[in-house]
Amino acid sequence: MAAHPATETIAAVATPPGIGGIGIIRISGPDAMALLRKIFVPHKPRAHFTSHTLYYGTIVNRHGHTLDEALAVYMRGPQTYTREDVVELHCHGSYLILQRVLRTLITWGCRLAAPGEFTKRAFLAGRIDLTRAEAVIDLLQAQTETGVRLAVNQLQGQLFTQLEAIRQHLVEYLALLEVAIDFPDDDVEIFDTDQIAARLQPEVIAPLARLIALAEQGRIVREGVKVVIAGRPNVGKSSLLNALLREERALVAPVPGTTRDTVEERIDIRGIPVHLVDTAGIRNHEDPVEALGIERARQKLAEADLVLFVVDAQAGMTARDHELYGSIREKPHLVVLNKCDLVSDEQARVQAGDFAGTRVVPVSAQQGGGIEALQEAIYQAIAAGAEFTDQMPCAPNTRHRAVLVRTLAACRRFARAMEEGAAVDLLAVEVQSALDDLGDIIGLTTPDEVLDEVFSRFCLGK
Image (tube, rainbow, N blue to C red; front, side, top):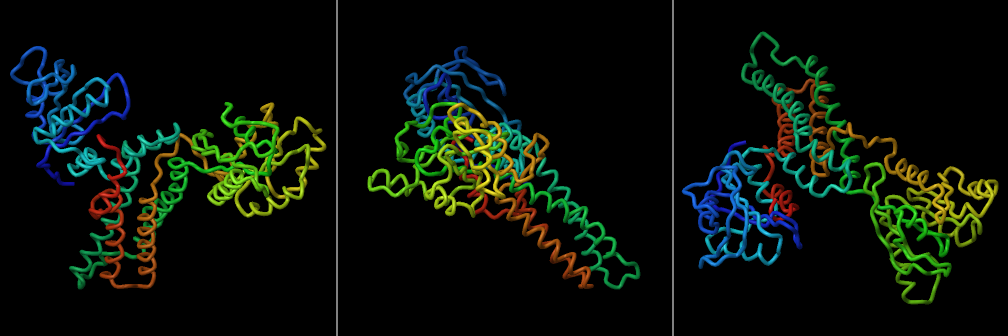
């Protein structure tokens, strides 16, 4: 991709908000060095700054008043993140100091960077393709080790490499078609439909289908799943939440209706972010506060990816349990038979028999028994046979998946058109359509509004 030289110099705080030992302001653009000379006074005066070398000194405002004691580094393009001249000021991690330095830069003509603008400039300069740019935000937002590894793989170009291999095959097909269009009367068959049809499945269609299948796994790793704990009051829902979290997060008491609002926490189950939601026990009650909690519980159940339906093994299935179970049985769910430490194994088996065809997990939330088995059952229900392992090379995101589906559809139309003996110019239209779609993913043909949407999801300073 051709470079797009920037005319404006931008700056932003590159470290998270809050108090810390260090706060970094990043500057990028043609005036980066000039700005450094205006606001940074090195401890040892010097005529020039050596690229990629850290210097100690003070930061001053337009009137020469000291704002902070800091370290500064000048990095000459194109050996930088944006391929432009870049300056980083390593200040003390005070919000007020960072804002004062930033305001001083702005008074010298620098512009505040938009969210993701540094990475966007790296993309426009051709240093990274769009899949790598999107991997940056995946890395920043990763919730588990698996999510981090997946983002790093994409940042290193594993998704791009697979897409580029598919694209090169399509480019070859299109080149042959264009030659056949230019020389229609040639005695030699330039475009052999039988040969290309035999290659299309292993070279293009199968790899596209595999990437589309990986997209759902990628969604789960990136976004996680919502698991809602539900049941009538006093069956041990809050105790179960605490046992899964291994901490006393929810208030537990023997009085029914203790939980009056949802309690939400996140755990990592074998690399998958699981958002646990403890809900108010669902019953008919006149207390207006508890009624609001029950209504919120119903809303969370409607949004759930998986429901843990908790039953009191000692009390058995009551009429209210049967009524509640009927309302959630069509959703993906597990039955959690709680308080199994208070009943015999035979009684627990009898209770489990009420849920023929449904996975029933016996636990004792108070004692911690069966919790590991429940976590494994949750994982199996979420993964549905997929394996979220270190060997996952990459996983397209939601935007990628939509484009890959369009690309695959164009390739299948191309295959069907070859079977039907369509003219070479019509075949070329389908191949070009597939190439345009792939170009959207890696950034070759991506519309500006899509680029704006992608980079708007970044934080300031990245």
